[in-house]
Image (cartoon, rainbow, N blue to C red; front, side, top):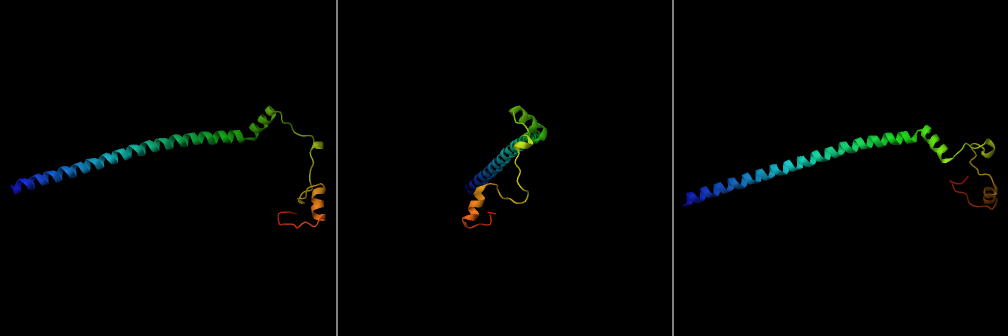
Length: 112
């Protein structure tokens, strides 16, 4: 009787171990399938990214920007319309900056 129980126990242990091994291989197979799918998605996204980078490069070109500006009606201003400031002074023209310094306002390092 004990031999039959020992034999039954051994068979049961073998069945459990075989089931665990099969279950583990099934998990590995499923994980490999997910990895393949993710790698496929990565390749698709990389190709799309390259297309978008080329599109950004093309749209950022000065030729395209000039064409787009002309299409929207922008024009180059006449030299009389352009008001230049003295280079390197960083001061704005007008009475606002003079009023701030004349009034004794405390200057910070960000203000000239």
